[in-house]
Every structure is written in structure tokens, then in C-alpha cells.
Length: 363
Ligand SMILES: Nc1ncnc2c1ncn2[C@@H]1O[C@H](COP(=O)(O)OP(=O)(O)OP(=O)(O)O)[C@@H](O)[C@H]1O
Ligand code: SF4
Ligand SMILES: [Mg+2]
Image 1 (spheres, rainbow, N blue to C red):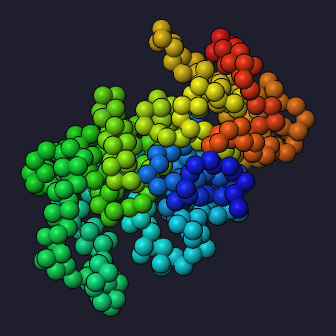
Image 2 (image 1 turned 90 degrees about the horizontal axis):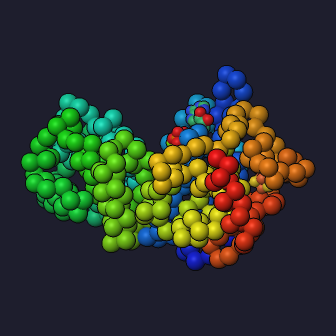
Image 3 (image 1 turned 60 degrees about the vertical axis):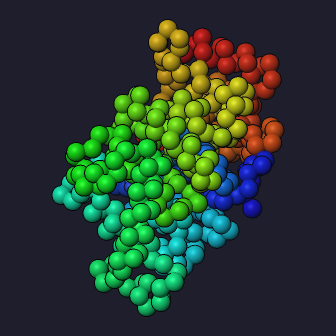
């Protein structure tokens, strides 16, 4: 059972104490160290942290698309609808979960399209083998992709479903759009298409990995608003990885913070911004741009993941660190329903507000 205490969440996905790393020429990089998180149906969860903290690696572990040659999972579980995706029959997971019950919106939609086919051809090609119908006989359902028959009535139904979704993601004139090549679409249009494609199989969970980073600021806000609306309307859970706290504030119900491969704090979004408890979270919020446009980083450097610091990995940058912080990773402490922190000396109450102000003044 997860050590994490998660309040009201009803548990569609629960990552429990997941540890993994990569074999590199310089040694083993410990990229996730006993990381836990939980998402309920229809919930938008923000996974935030600085570059390199392991957000994409965690997303890839959930999707089951880690590089086979170098990735080593050393512990933990990825429970989806009660089944551990790490130990479940992978043929079954590929048929029912990956790309179906769990789908993905990438950071850069341009590289996800093949430049020599129209977007319509590419979407239909994916549907042709990705959405076998339960009514079809098993022998036909699981034929290799190239041999799958694509009956015209099903093709028509799939096409109608695509048009409905293009409308839902507010892409006007969808038939003309499907006849275009990827380079003929704007970045915002391509990302809307990616979101439509992610929703097409009727997933329970969409993992969106920095879905707006490659877009202009005004388009970013539109795409974030779209994700929020679709999650609510379709009751789809969204795991949004981002280093942009503003994006998390805009659309997330809850926020999980990671630092150097460790989870450090999780809270409902209002409480997260109003009452952060972990020293790293406090500094992260204090480093946000000020009203006068200035901004500054957190003093010190993110540790290397090959031979990282023992205990709490934030200890070399934390002025509250003492002996235990440098030896044993702190356990989870629940502060309120849905708000937990991993720290021996979290900020509390009035002292927390003073510390946040001091951190802001110092950075
Ligand atoms: N295949 C790999 N082999 C070795 N190291 C890897 C591999 N993939 C990721 N890493 C390392 O794992 C760490 C976490 O990377 P990851 O991409 O998950 O971070 P991130 O939080 O998504 O960062 P960003 O915000 O820049 O996208 C980094 O130190 C990265 O170099
Ligand atoms: S556990 Fe210790 S080092 Fe880590 S954030 Fe808390 S006080 Fe700082
Ligand atoms: Mg990433």
C-alpha cells in the first residue's frame, strides 16, 4: 500500500514507491527514488519540478515506453484500475491500456507527425489498427497491423468520431484540415490535433508532457484552457508534467512536486500556492517572476543523479538540513487531507509565511 496519504482521490492511477534508473557509461543514474503519486478520475494533476527532476521519465514509466537497453526498474508499482502495469501481461497491456485507456500528448507535436502524409491519412492509419472493436471475432481483431481489414462502415464511424473531436478541440473546417500536411498547420493547430488524437480512443487518463512549452504564450493559455475543459466535460484524468508553475495554477486540481528524482510535496492547488510546506517548494514559489518582471533562481545546483546525496536530495541546498536529512530520506507527513510533505523540518503556519517572505527577499 502506498505510504502517501491522498485525501479525496478515488484512485484511477497510483504510482507506488517507484524506483528506476539508467545504466550509463559513467555509472547508474538513479532517476526516480521511491516516487508515489495518485490520480482520480476526472482529476488534473500537475507534476512540477525543475528540468531533469524526472517528470518525463515518470511519464514514460507509466506509459511503459522506457528504453529497454538502459532502463532498470528497481522497485515499486504502477497500479492502473487496480492492476500493476509493470507485472501485468504486456500483451494485454498493449491491447487495452497503452494508447487506449492511457494516451499521450507530447511536448512537440511537429515531430510526432510524418511530414509526407496528410494528417487525415495518419489519423485514419492509427485508428485502423488501434481501435479494434469488441464485436469483431478475436481472429480478426488481433491480426498484425498490415493485415487488419478496415470495413467501410467502421471507417465511416471512425471518421465521424474524428470530426466530432476536431470540433471539440475547436479546430474549424475539420475536413479541409484533415487534407493538409503537418507543415501547413500552426503549432497551436497541431497541438489541438494531438489532443483530439489522444482523446479519440476514449481514454481514462491522458498524460500531457509539457504540452505547451513549444507554443507562443497566448496559444499556451488557450491549449491549457482546452485541456481543463475537456478533462471536466469528458471526466478524463490528466497528468500534466510542467516546469511552469503558472500552468499548474491555471488548470490543475492538485500539484505534486519533484526534486532530483524524489517526490517532496503534494497538495490541492489553492493550498499548494497559499501554504507550501517543503523548503524546496517555498523556494520554487519565491523564484517566480516578480511584479517588476525580475526573477531569480534557487541558490546552489541540482545534484547529479549518478551518486546523488543520501537522505533528502535537497539537503545540500537547504539551510534547515541537519544530520537525519543527510542520512535517511524523510517519511511522508500528512498536514491536511490531500496535503503531504516529505521533510523533517517543514514550514508550518506563521513561520512558513515568514520563511516564504525571507526566501523571496533573498533570491
Ligand atoms: N535514456 C536515458 N539514459 C540516461 N539518462 C537518462 C535517460 N533518460 C533520461 N535520463 C536522465 O534522467 C534525468 C531525468 O530526465 P527527465 O527527462 O525525466 O527530466 P524532466 O524532469 O522531464 O526534465 P525536463 O523538464 O527538461 O523535460 C535526467 O538527468 C536525464 O539526463
Ligand atoms: S528533509 Fe531536511 S534537507 Fe530536506 S528539505 Fe527538509 S529540512 Fe531540508
Ligand atoms: Mg521532460
